[in-house]
Structure formats: structure tokens, C-alpha cells
Length: 92
Image (cartoon, rainbow, N blue to C red):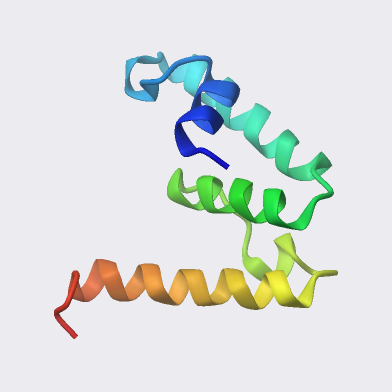
């Protein structure tokens, strides 16, 4: 999935920072609904990572309760993101 295409699809713009707070909230709601109805595992994971980047992702255990492999992948993703945030690239 293309990140720019996802942002444009759910937020109607290539620049979410240009949206009003209400427009941004509506985009987040569309994203959450999209995640909730998506059945293809890799697309669900891509939507979840976008939700995480925007600070609205459910915990992996909740998001992927019936999908153990995706739950493990999401937990690994969060661990890697935390390391990048804490140490930066190449600073371990």
C-alpha cells in the first residue's frame, strides 16, 4: 500500500497538516472504519501502522486478537519504533 495514497484516500488531501481539526478527526474516523471492515491481513496491518503513526491505533492484542501472526508483527513493529525513537538510527 502506498502511504500517500492512503492519506489521500482517508483525508482527501496530500497534506493532512492543512486540514482543520474537524476535517482531520473525520479522516481519522474514516481510517478507523476502514481498518474495522478490512479483511485482507496485509491491508489491515498497513492501516494499523498508519493509525499508529497518527496515534490512534488500538493495542496489537485488541487489533489482531484473532490473528496471532499479525499481533506478533505489530508488537515487533512497536518495539522497533520505540528503539528508533529512543536511540535513533544506528545509535544502539
